[in-house]
Length: 452
Image (cartoon, rainbow, N blue to C red):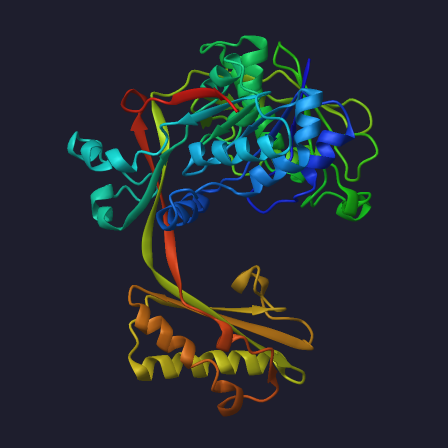
């Protein structure tokens, strides 16, 4: 049995969680997930400004703070913090280990090859259309605006680095669940073709990839009774070689691990539950058997899988214009009525100016911001309502002019406005997501392991 914990669900998650996991009890592996689809384009911009950047700088900081536990307790760390610059991330990690007095005592593995931006035009010329999986459009329609293109690799390059002695493995873009599956492949000797076990490891990785979301965080089921949110524990997999596993957390930590909460996480971002497709195989979520095995312990068994496809998914980001958002707070009496009137006034003024805006979107926080028209009209008068109004356009000047129309309404529109933030709002570039596929035969992951 091996114990694999996840201490980060995204770039910006709790800086204390990885340290609490390292110090709270025995672990074999610590995984840290920093990447979302949009994160790659952010990291690409950072790298364009500074070739030494382009990775999640929180990770070397975590290694600095947790170096003693990692080295002296022999905990291996697997992360996708490399982003657009895995080698740069490795160098930053090497520097903090040296500074902490642990230089020469560890090997660090780096998985690269996921960044296909330099080969993109050549691939298009070879007949790979990178068709948008949602719209059916070919990538040629927006090629000039593409900012990044990264392949989702799987668990086997991670396992390769671990087999070569890496104590820390840093990847670029990879399948989220692969961070946990890679250690299982390495420790248990699973092979490509062990579809049921690979599916089980994938599902285990999926359960913990969102951190405390599987230990009671963001959980709808009996959320008011979940103990000690302030001290919530992050998830741990206790994995067996036969593909069965238990999800738990360190004793004495807050939160809760139960069937209801784990089931919510299982349904998160999966699409067809019978065909959860990853680079390493297809997992069938309908075969999962769950059993509460005591306090804060849920056992998984019975998982079945099917053969992997011949394609990798590619995450492509591209520039899609500009946007800006402003807010206005209207107070009692008639707060909702005033906010709606202000919204209509602003829209008429935008029309009179002839601004070329692709869309103008309004929300009324406190009334219907989360559910829009489905929420219906409020039953009672609101004490205050926040009008949040945003616009987007391919023309930056049009969005800038839109922002200028928000501030004046404080004095030339409905009464009792406060909380005006439009004066501090700014125009942001919109980065859109383009999901596509590429043949596995066209891309090869590269693994390098070095002493640091």
